[in-house]
Image (cartoon, rainbow, N blue to C red; front, side, top):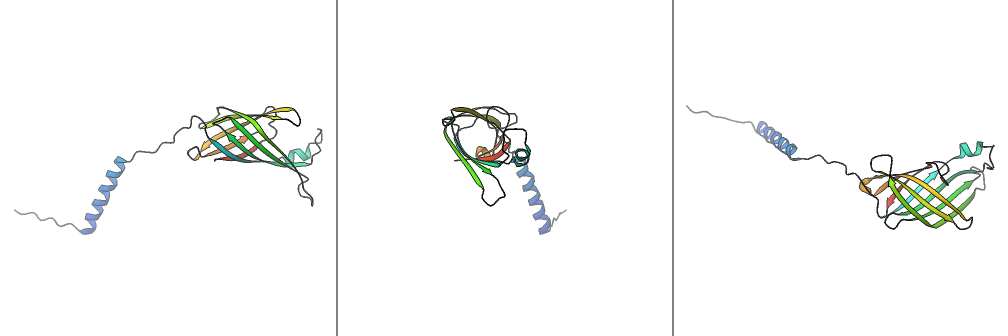
Length: 173
């Protein structure tokens, strides 16, 4: 007795494709996100603060109500614990002659501890304003994303010099 098997080309191609998918899935291992346990290197940051609604309406303080927002450019060096910041404040936004104020501090120091979330850190920058003879401590929550190349930044956690909340992003330099 003779048995003759004839397979259709489409059926044969389907069986081959199915077998390769099954074999491929058996060897693929899921990629797990790697937790970042420390920060190193240098980052350039930009962040923005817009407090016009609160600041303009605050008539019970010594505030003139004229500052409507600030933006910050920062340099964080986690390897050498260095910190620099440039702040630009905008006054009388929406009028024909906008007044800006600017301040730069380049002699800050930086300390880092674990943050409130996975892959997050709390960084404190200590700044000495030599013109006003004042020491400020700026506190930031940082979350490492993009393989550690980007930090999401949240500021205004309370404390000396923190002020109103700010948000921003830092990129590895």
